[in-house]
Length: 326
Image (cartoon, helix red, strand yellow):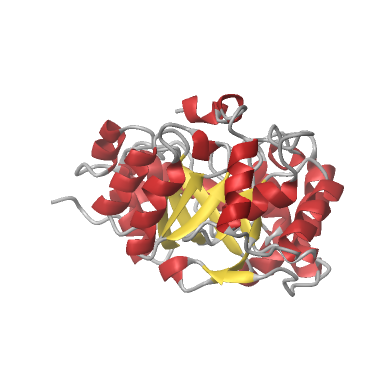
């Protein structure tokens, strides 16, 4: 039986954070002043919304991804990052995806989002598999994001069955998730992956996660082990909120003769059980273009989806490169 962890006890007693992890609820006065003086942006979503599974929360079809070739995760590009995040808010994006390992992403978000905290869905991730390590990353994420809670805290890039065993061990990361959720620091828990769909499906069977973030695109459907037919039925059975990622395969699918964004995004959002998707952006103009696609989304027919799958049949291998990442 492990001793129950509180944030205060954890910060005081855990050897992994004794060297200086600070409580994320302590926002310095300078930051508070910036929050108080921030100009309010429009907060009405212009996109269709769906309920994110058993979370009961309505989210727009498109969220802002935090990883990839984007200023939002790069140090030294605060001006560009701020412009993208503010544009996302003004365009109706409410789901913001980040992770402890996404470069400067959490810091950039933490400088813009605090005034709108109650109006957005903020999701971060931990790649640590042990309880203390996960707590350490959670504290750091909260501090960077200038918030005292996450809407969803997710296990990052879970790729192997043995990783699940580590997570669900007596001192595994799931203990930190349960403690944080019990204390109200985390509203919902999730699992993410882009390597092996069987692992994510097994994770959903083992534990009542609220959300899952998985790789789903038309090219992946041609993979010998595609995510959609393996993960989505389990998620639907358990009413898990599903967020799609790698929609255009970092833009590699968006080439003449392959797909456009309407097809790439429309395909994923037409799959039964997918509630929304996250896509990173390199510029405000690219973001605006993606939002226009989400605004005009119409569910595709099975025939249309089959045609899109066929367009990627000869190029699927070069567009599922991320499946090798662990």
